[in-house]
Every structure is written in C-alpha cells, then in structure tokens.
Image (cartoon, rainbow, N blue to C red):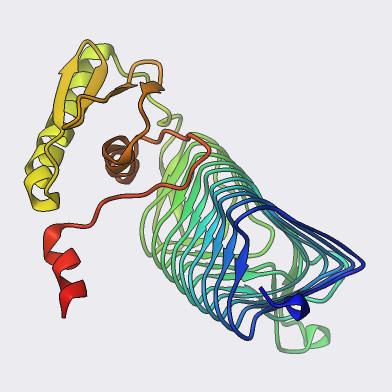
Amino acid sequence: MSVQSLKAKKVSAGTNFTIGENSCIQAEEIIIGDNVCIGKNVVIKSNRVHIGNNTLISDNNTAEVSDLFELGICTILGKDNSFHCRKFMSGDYLYMGKQNEIGGGGSSGPNSEVSIGKYCMIVDRVILNTSEKIEIGDDVGIGTEVMIWTHGSYNAILDGFPANFAPVKIGSHVWIPARIVVLPGISIGDNVVISINSLINKDIPSGSLAAGIPAKVIKENYYPKTLSEEQKTALILPILEEYKMQLADKNLSSAISYDKGIIHVVAENNEHSFFNIFNMTYGGVENSNFEDLRDFLRRKGIKYFTGKMFSSIQPMAFRQLNNF
C-alpha cells in the first residue's frame, strides 16, 4: 500500500488491507476494517469513508460522494461502478455487480442519498437515480438493467407538461428482477415480488405479487407463506440431490445427508458441520466444504450469514484453465 493511497486527516486501517495500482481514497476521515481489498484504478472521494471487514472493491470503481460513503461487512463491488450523491450507505453483505450507476441527473442536491439495508443484491447495469432519496430495506434483490428514478422532467411545465421529483422507498424482502422501471415517488412494501419487465407507476402494497406495463397487483397478501416441515423437506431434498451431483465435478468427497430438518456435511477428514433448515441455525467446522454448500444454498434462496464472504469451490473444468 502506498502512503499516497490514503489522504485524510484521520485514518484507521485494519489488518490485511490492500489497495491496487492507481487507486486512492481522499476524505477527512477514513475507517477501514480488516481483510479489505481494493483493486486497481479505484478512486473514492468523500468527507467520510467507512469500509467494513471482509470487503472487496474491484477495479475501476469511482465514487464522488460528498458526505458519507459507507459499506458494511462482507461487501463485494464488481468492476466499473460509479457513485455520485451526497450519501451512500449500505449494510452488511451488499453484493453489487458491474457497470452500475448510482447518480444521474440532479445527483448533487441536498436530498441525494441512498440507504441500503443488509443482505441486498444489485446485479449489473442498474441505474439508481439519486436526484431524491432512495431507501432500500433488508434482503432486496435488484436484477440486471433495472432503473429506479427519482426525477422526471424535460418539457416546459408552464406549457402543461409533466414533471416529477420525489423519493423512492422499497421495503424488505423484495425481489425486483431484470428490466423493471420504478418511477419517482413510488413506495414498494415488504415481502413483494415484481414480474420481469414491469413498469411501476403506482405504490405496491406489502405481500403482493405484481406484474405488467403498468404493473398491477396480481395477488394480494401472498407473501410470505408459512410452510410446514414436510413442505420444507420436500423443497430441500431435490436441492441436495443436485448438489451431490456437483461434488465429483468439484473433486469433493463430502458426505451429505439429511435428517429431520438438518443437513449434515462430513468432509474427507471427518470434520462435521450442519445446517438446520427449520430454525436456520448452523454449526460445526466452517471449512471449505461447509462454505461451498453454504454458497450453493444461498443461490437457491436459503441464506446463512456467518460474518464471512460467501465462497465456493470452482469445478475442475475451470481450475484446469489455470494450467494453460
């Protein structure tokens, strides 16, 4: 790490902090946790920069965030993202893919703020327009090429043309998949699923399934559903069978078994770990076999958070590419 990489009146950096070539952070206050890795050509400018433990910021990220740029623990930012607003605050376990734009027109105003809860995902080429405030709850998934707008104007309002400047609020446990447009002033409740390629121009109440252009509520009070232990078992068994088929592909010899809501994982060296799907607890040895299954379950919508980044073992076919 170059001394010139961090420029601040107050700097605190934890252990195993690395920052790549042509990268720098400029702020009045910089607080960086343990095991933080910042790639090449990353520029972060803000009054205060707070980065939590076990965080990865990939190459070519740029942030001009005047007041506060804050990332929780176990954050992953992919390549080529840009941030321009007054405040950007995200909770633990944010995953952000690549080529996302946090900013856009009017993103320097006093209400230009993004607040994101824990366990959220923002995939690729998403626009969060920060002319006004955007508030996102916990466990929200935002798919590829989603656009969330807080302003819309062009023609002269004195000639009767429309203009709208208003914040957007999204609750917790919401799925907004690919190519959805959310217009200014919209509020989306908790436990909501929106169908792909929808236009949200009206508020969506909690527990709804909505779809269409413009979107309409298809089912009300639909989510969440209370599943019996038998129903949960019926869902998990084919998922485990699919995972077992991948073990040989990854050259893993883990023994996977299931009994009364508990997934047992026994590694080749007899280290044991488990996941309880009835009460969402886990335990035992958190080795690479444990982490690989944890990441597989995450992809299937069964998420266990341990304070560490999710990690999985590459299949042999991809590991062999390193030999070329």
